Length: 147
Figure 1: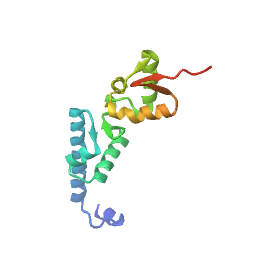
Figure 2: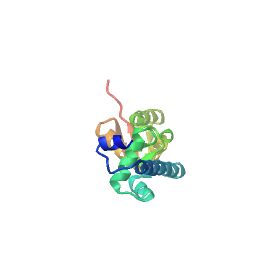
Figure 3: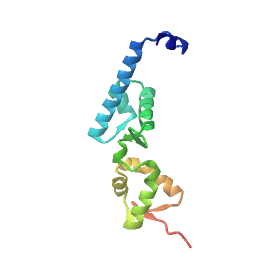
Figure 4: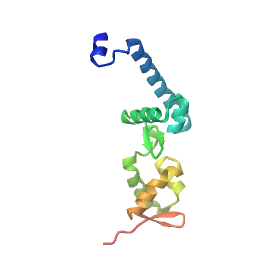
């Protein structure tokens, strides 16, 4: 093991250091998942405070958890994957809801996507800019496609 560390340029690390780092990372991951289960989501700043790490470290840990399928990122919040509509399916879910309901308020769309109303704003803005939907006061409506 020592030879592999030296060969890898990590001659200042010991096996004990690696084990401690692993324990901290796994423990931190479990702490994050516990918070998300309890409150529904977590932000990078909340993870930073929880784990007592820098913003960059918190971001990297959350990003790794997303890459491993432990969390799903929507806007600046991280959710358990099974509790929200995945980002790649959100537009289709909104269009299907509007097609069925006729119109929706932002709170309705948040409920469909199972995210906070503030998390819907960038999604709706993008859909408005792409002319997939329109806004009438506080209501979002499906644009009728011309044949």
